[in-house]
Amino acid sequence: MSAVAPWLSGSLVFLGAAVIAVPLSRALGLGAIIGYLAAGLVIGPFGLGLVRDPETILHFAELGVVLMLFLVGLELEPRRLWALRRPIFGWGSAQVLGCAAVLGFAGWALGAPWKLALVAALGLALSSTAIALQVMEERNMLATSAGQAGFAILLFQDVAAIPILALIPLLGGVAQPDDGNAWIEAARALGVVLAIVLGGRLLLRPLFRWIARSNTPEIFTAASLLLVVGTAALMQAAGLSMALGAFLAGVLLAESEYRRELETDVEPFKGLLLGLFFIAVGMSVDFDALLRQPLLVLGLLLAFLAIKGLVLWGLARAIGLPWQERPVFALLLGQGGEFAFVVFQAAAGARVLDAETTSLLIGAVALSMLLTPLLLVAFDRWVLPRYAQVEQRSDMPLLEEPQDAPIIIAGFGRYGQIVGRMLYANGLKATVLEHDAEQIDFLRRFDFSLFYGDATRLDLLRKAGAASARVLVIAIDDMDKSLKVADLAREHFPQLTVVARARNVTHWYALRDRGVRHIERETLDASLMTARSVLEAMGWQPHRARTLALRFRRHNLEQLEQAWPHHQDEAKLVSMSRAGRQQLEELFAQEREAREARRREGWGE
Image 1 (tube, rainbow, N blue to C red):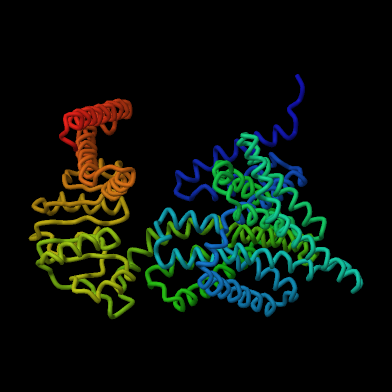
Image 2 (cartoon, rainbow, N blue to C red):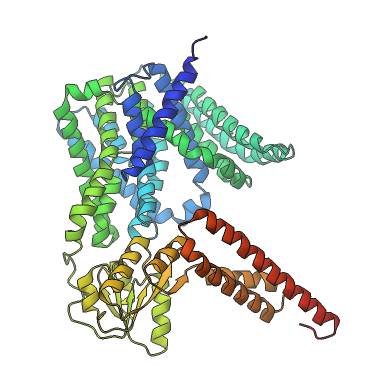
């Protein structure tokens, strides 16, 4: 039997490690990125040594970096960038320059050469876009002020990594050409960049139009990869970074009318490609270098996390973020990022950093990325409950006196506000509990009994008057907290009529399991109103479109009620869903026949 090809055995190791490590990491609540990093640590030459060839590590790392930067450029729409220009370039530049200045000064003050201190500071100032955005999505932070500020800063970091990479060769310790040759090299590099940008704008659409005529969807993916590799090769031939070429390729595709189709084709590979990059990052951690100087590594890790955390805390105050959002904001952006590996590897190639220093810096960044999810778990478990009880602002309306309103609204975001305004317009008094200080700042100017507090706390519900109130409206965005409030109401305040908001069908079933009967799915009525508008635009009479929408709504709710006792039985649910769809189709078919009969008899609609 012939031996297994090296590339095949390497692929088996990479894929096997990812398949084991990532689900385990997710089960522990640490996220997929940490699983990829851990897989790389285990299979790398400084772990079990399942992959020992340094060239293999380098190729995987370069492929991951190039593809990652291509995807960043593909998502960077110029219109989106322009709309966020002030927070991106204002807050983003303040974060990068502020952290780099403090970190660089600290390194220089401790005796590091200024070039080393500068490159290390620039690399450590960057944060992990992949990890931060993943955590923000899991915590529903993207709609908050902290989430928007964090997104803007991360976007600026992704863009700032490009000039940082371009700066590194200028700091390199390699022999420099004479001034004449230097000007020629600079002009050639500038010419290549301009040729890529202008040529891409002129040739990209005709090229993809020609490819589209072939009716071969997979060629779109091949063409995008050809563009990435070709642009990266041109940039490398001009003496510039391959990463810069990949980024430019992504931006060129982002402006193409074929971008959506390309995104659809490439999206399934996005997570895996980034995963390969993080596996390569984990493999590159030199345990020997870390263990030779463990105190230095620990000191470097704690120092840069503390310095970045303090700078980010000050920036959060300057931006005006609510005080309860600042710790998570500082933790998420305080870690090192994936672009730091790119910067340090480029600096090592340009002889700005020696191999030992590069290993120490890469190790510190990787450890910070592994440590951040653990710090967030610890913060949520031990710090946040105490932190939330500390009154940082004297003007925050805390619930201190018992209330007697007949209605309590838990959660006053975009959903709860509409409920509250409707009640207020009809003269009904309600006590509102809201855990977002920013919302309270805005809404306290109106005549609502609005109080800061977490509705999942039994003592606050009692003070809000739950023992004597008639109705409790659960309008909380977080599903777990919503169900916890429903549990408290059922156990301690059985006289309350609970009216709840459901995010989706799963949430609806969970609320029904808790005895809640008045439930509204947040998107159902809005979707039906849209469907009514579409029917009217297609020629249906308005009253007819309304009747059909109401009939569909009634059928949908009846089907949910019938399916609820069986929602744990997937096979039964599928069968009932098919039967319900067929029943609705028959109902509409009968109505169409009746309408046609009336029309033939001259009765009209």
